[in-house]
Image (cartoon, rainbow, N blue to C red):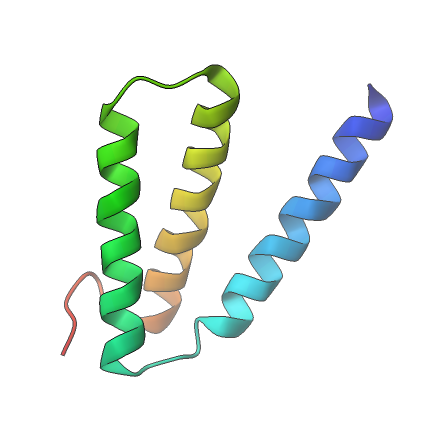
Length: 78
């Protein structure tokens, strides 16, 4: 169990680091792509899902929202 937590924490940190690295994309296409992925995840979160899927969805949503905050868009694509 401890190994699983360590692997999960490592994967999460790498995922956040790579999303932060790629969030430097300030292009309108990148913004629209990010916003469409957020909308798609919000739709999936309103539908039924298992506990595991819910954790994955919330993790993806957190990384997308962090990328949005880093880009400074606040949901408004130019």
